[in-house]
Amino acid sequence: MAGDFAAIVRPLLEWRLAAGETLLGLIAATHQRTFSGELYAIGVTDRRLLLQSLDRKTQAKGAPRSISPDALVSADIDGAGADWTPTTAVLGATPITIRLRTTDGEKLKLRALTGSGLIGGLAGGEGQREGVGALAQWTSRRL
Image 1: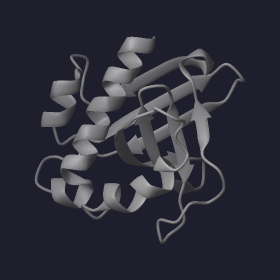
Image 2 (image 1 turned 180 degrees about the vertical axis):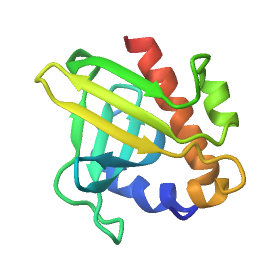
Image 3 (image 1 turned 135 degrees about the vertical axis):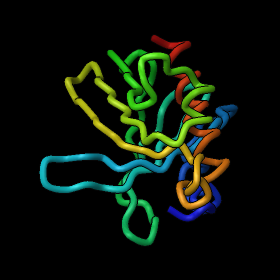
């Protein structure tokens, strides 16, 4: 993923924000399925998560999925080890797995890079690191 992912995707999500809502971070992730995967932008706001499916040209495919804290049963972020914190995820080059479970029974498994390490710039760079940190803080405050 090019380092300008946030610049490309931010406008796709910003116009979906409610009055006074702030977009805290963006993450490029793939939604894993048994025999396929799909590119997603995860927008972390002060109020909810926005999951926008993207096509190969990073254009929106359909409307984004909105997940409020009340609709989230669990959120697990794995991949940086048992001592995972926002700081260790941002500093490490390990890919992470984001598992979200909602009150309507949906289970999402998304994989993302942290934007750091030797290929950090190709993995979203600083914008990706900020998005991962924003997601970690958002989930820790709401669960």
